[in-house]
Image (cartoon, rainbow, N blue to C red):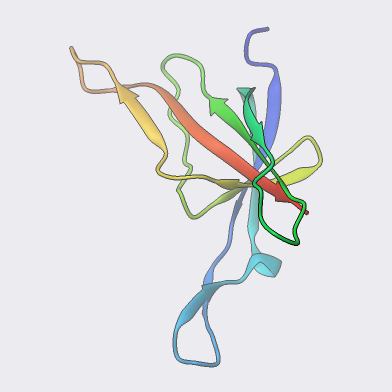
Length: 113
């Protein structure tokens, strides 16, 4: 199977913060299981910040040809026991002949340390 991974999409509602703004309430996030995707390693780096030893890791999430995915840049993805941020816009590649979705790609990012 080329798309063997199962991930969980986490979508948090917006709630009022104490300062009159809005923030995401990740404790109330709705979990949606997504089967049949591929998660590929992208890169890992260790930024040279003074006084901090961190590692930034990115993976690429892909759907099979012909499969759209309800995923937003404000969502998170749980994969392999870790929660990942959706890094940037979700790319919905379209078929030029029909305008329908060919496949979806999203970058996932996690910072440790």
